[in-house]
Image 1 (cartoon, rainbow, N blue to C red):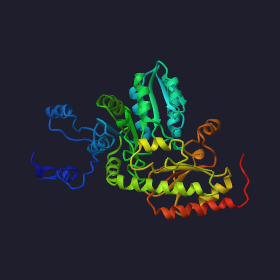
Image 2 (image 1 turned 90 degrees about the vertical axis):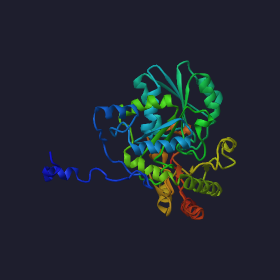
Image 3 (image 1 turned 60 degrees about the vertical axis):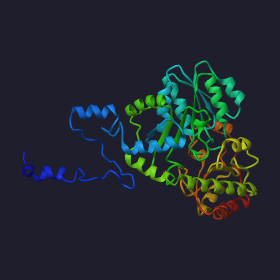
Image 4 (image 1 turned 135 degrees about the horizontal axis):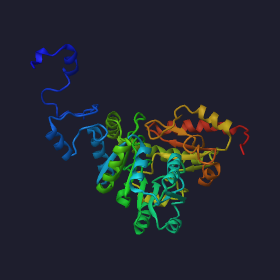
Length: 400
C-alpha cells in the first residue's frame, strides 16, 4: 500500500515514532521509556533472545543494564541486577537461594522491615535465628546443619554497629552457607563486601548512591551463577526498576563519591560535637573512640566511617518533639542518604513493628534518633543541633 494512502488516524500513531539519521552517541545516556522493542521477523526475534537483547521492559531495559554495569564496577562483583527498591532486592535475592527446610542466621539489629521479611519466611518453611553478629563465637555456635544464609548489614540500622565481614564469610563458607550483606549505609566508597568474601551485596540505591531523595531503586551484586537464578525469579515477581528511576539513579551516582565523602566528613564532626553536648546521653558513630567497633572500622573501612549516626536523648516525648521543631536545617524524613540532613525516630518508623522488649535488647530506646548527615556546612549543622538540644535544659519529666 502506498504510504500516502494512510489515513490521518494511522499516521498520527507513526510519524516521528522512529528516529532517522545517526543518534547512537549522545553525550548523556538516553532514557528508554518504551515498554517493548520491535523486531523485523521471527529470525530477528530469535537472534534477540540469543544475545539477551531487548524485547520487553520487564525482562530487560537499557537503563537498568547501564546502571547494573556501574553498580557491578563499584561493588567488584561479576554482575548485578537492578530492582524497584531495596526491599525488592532483599526479598528476591533471598528467595532465589533459599528453599523449604533451610535456615537463615541473621544479625539481630537490622532495618525493621528486613526483620519482618525474614520472620515472614517461616510461611515458606524457612527458619530464621537472630543473634549478635559482633560476637563471632555466638555466630559460630549458632550455625545449624541446614543453615544456608548468613545475613547482615555492614553498619546496622539504627545502632551503627559494625560486623567483621571477612570473619563472617569464613564461618559461612566453612559451613557451605552464603554470606549476604546489605551495604546501603556505607556504599562501595567505604567498603566492598564481595572483596571481603561476601557472596551477595545488596544496596538500596534509593539512599546514598542516588543521593537526591527522588527515586526508588535497589540492587544485588554477586556471581554470574547467583545472578542468573535471581534474574529468573525477578522477571516472574516483577521486581524490576522502572527505566526512569534507573536513569535518574545512574545520574545521581556520577557524583556519589563527592557527596558521600562530604557526608562522612560531616557525620564525624557532628558526632564529635554531639558527644560533648551535656544533653546527649550517647552517640553511635564508628569514628568515635568510644564506639565498640572503632578499631574494626579503622581496619576494614576506607575513606571514612559512613554518613549515618544515631544518638540518645532523655526519653521525654514532649522535649523530643520540641527538639525536632527547633531544628532549622535538619528535617524529619522517612528515608536517608540524601544531600540534606534528615532525622528519624526508629521507635516510630523503621522499628515500629518490633516488640518493645526486642527493641530494647537492640538498644533502641524512645530517645534514640537516627541522623542521615547531608552536605551542608558542618558548622551550621553543629550549631543547629546544639541550639535545638538546649530544650533539655528546662525541667523535664521522663517517660517510663
